[in-house]
Image 1: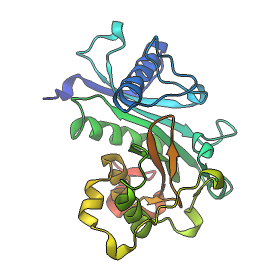
Image 2: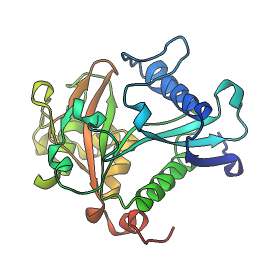
Image 3: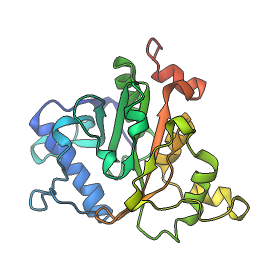
Amino acid sequence: MDLDAAHLTLGLATTEEDRLAAERLRYEVFIEELGGDGDMIDHDGRFERDRFDPDFDHLILVDGNRDRSTLDHVVGVYRLLPGGRRDRFYSEDEYDISLLVESGRKLLELGRTCVRQGYRGGLALHFLWTGLADYVRERDIEILFGVASFHGRDIDALAEPLSHLRHSYLAPPGLRVRAQEDVYQPMDLLAPEEIDRVAAMRATPALIKSYLKLGGFVGDGAFVDHKFNTTDVCLVIDIDLMKPAARARYSKGSET
């Protein structure tokens, strides 16, 4: 699909129409496309939502050529929760993140990232990343984190990419969140010498690879999300440990 940047705008959802359009896109991607489900999902209205939504900001990418009246205008979404806005993060259902919470540093949880089919790759994702960098700088965020997903729940099929992440990108101790004990899924399923690194990265979702390129790490252990039909890992990005070019975009006082 050829995208016309002149018709794309990025900003935080501030109206009910925009929030509903974001939830509609989430439904199309996570429920219809990927086969997920959940307790608060509105299948009749085709809205994907949960109890955390009222406290999150939705960074949305809008195509002005699409129909607002049918909630079709949002083509990209990032769900963002700054620390201190509520007493619990979404990720805590899956991971023990107490070392981040107790660090005293400014946190931002990322989640529900999705882009409409036909807009994926290139320009749309660039818009969302630019908006995220602006959001982080304006709030002087120090640590980004959140769960990111592999499609499916077959751990054997995901053994190579999960093992590669564990051996090559495990977070340092001060950032090493861990999957909750009752749902902990080991990631070191293969020894390093058994891994085809090229194949492992090819099997890793683009969003996870994007976080790694920024200088991100993975936590200890995966989580199999049976409702959403995914296998999740927790990504952690410390702004101070980002690669220099990325840190310049995300740090306060940098130029865009």
